[in-house]
Every structure is written in structure tokens, then in C-alpha cells.
Length: 365
Image 1: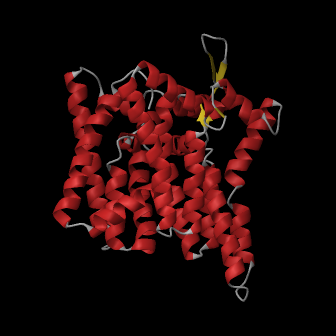
Image 2: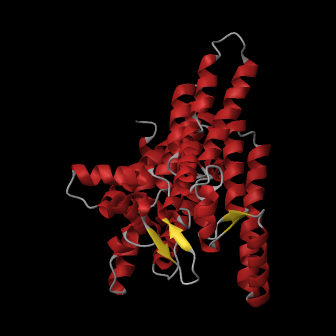
């Protein structure tokens, strides 16, 4: 706790700044910050899972039938549990779960980075994670904080060789978001490397961890398939009705191209921002990030950038790829303290303002 305390304090301070700016903006706009965080967009769909089970659908104006089976079950299960044990309703329970999970996520990110690069790098990695432009999502009744918490601790368990814990945490991550398969893949890579590196230790633990890792995601996808009458493609059909699919990034590329033509400044800025992502990944490779981290991060990035769907959500979908932040965290850890914390402060203020602006928009994050 003494090691992680500064990182958790920095995280809490940055997120508190974001919430204060959001509350002030909402007051001036005569809106409710609580409602913006817990009762819009995906948050409503998680509540519908609690209230209606997986039998709720909406028909879009173009005739598509949108099912709440697109949303994985762990967060609504926790919302239901908290609302059963406390006076909180499901939406507020979602905020409570996210608040606890966000601290667990920050702690997990610190443990991973400290293990690989040291305590100071861990501190700045957590501060950068808190100060992401889309960091406000970490405080919403969304599943991102819960997923990152489970993913980070699964990765830490993998790096430490705690295979049963790694497999169980990866399975829970797979019950949280479809990208949970990235965590399972990281456990597989870590287990394979462990089996190849040391043939004298008992082999059943890494094998069992690898077998446990995909059960959450695979089990839910198969269950949706059985419910929809198509065991292997049912979940893809559900996501397809939402306009989500994997097209190798063609739709996103067309979106950027159209934006460059219609609004050159915004289009070029977006293109530059997208190019930064593979550059940061490559820097992580050059800096020797462990193979499980690179596997996890690469799959998260690929699924975020190469899927079709609502393009405004791509920054949020990239948020779990926290290993992308490690090259910047290492640079800040080596810089003078005044410069490093000035960068963090500027990023925190920018994230607070952008987060408030984002949530007051018409589209979902």
C-alpha cells in the first residue's frame, strides 16, 4: 500500500478534477451531472439487463432490432447485487461499481508497470491513464473501469506466474466486454512461454490457467448463440444489428477520408492521432515490453481501430490499451519532476474540460 498510495492519490485527484469540472458545466447548462454519468447511452442498456433480463429489444427507425444481448453480463450482475444489498438503484449502483473498479484498475496498472519498469514509471502510467482525454468514462456507469481492473490484474498475475488467478481474472474480464479475449490471449502467450522456459516445474498450473482464461467470453457468446438459434454466429448477428463488425478498418478509413475532404483540419488531426497509436505500440516493442502485454495491447488496438460501428466510440474502445502509455510514462519518469508534473497537470485539465464537453454532446462516448 505504501508503494501504490502516491499513484492512487494522483489518480483520485485527477478524476476528482474531472468530476468537479463536469458538475460545474452541468450546473451552468441546467443539467444533472449524475444523470450524464449514469443514465444515458450504454448505462441505460446495462440497467435494462438488470430490470428485464436479456429479453429487452428496441426497433430502430430503419427497422433494425437492437437487443441488450450485445452487452456482456458482469457489470449488470454487479449492479443488481449492489442494488439488492443497498438502497441504490441499478444506475447509481453502476456508478458505485465503477468508482471501486476505477481504483482497482489504477492499482492494477501500477502493479504491472512497477513490475516491469519500476515504481516511478508506475506512478506516471497511472497519472496518464487518469488524464486520458476520454478519462471521464472511468467515472461513468460503463464497463470500462471494471474491464481494465480485471485485465490489469490478470496481466499482473500472468507476469508473476500466478496461473490460476490469471485464468480466473481473464475469464471474468471476458464476461465484461468482448475484448476480454485479448486478456485470454495474453494468458495463453504467457503460459506458453512459461512452459517453454522451465520444463522442470509442474506444468498443470499454466495449462489450467490457459484453459480457464477464455471461458467467460466464450461461454457468454455461446449462450447468446443458443438463445438466438445460431450457436456460432448468434452474437455476431446481435452485434451486426448494432452496426458493429470487423472489417479490417475499411469503414474507419473511409470516415477519416471523408472528414479530410469535408473538414481538412479535423480530418488531418484525426489521422495524425490514429497514427500515434501504432507508433506508441512500436515504441513499446522497442522498449522490450513483455510478450503478454504486447499481445493484449495489440489485440485491443486492432479490435478498436479495425471494427465498424460508431466512430465516436473509438477513443473509449482504445482506453483499455494502457500499455500504449508506457513509452510516455518512461519518458516522464526520466524527466525532471517539475516538467513531468506540469505535463500531467496540463493533461488533467484538458481531460477534465474535454470530458465535460463530450458528455454534454448528443452522441454517446
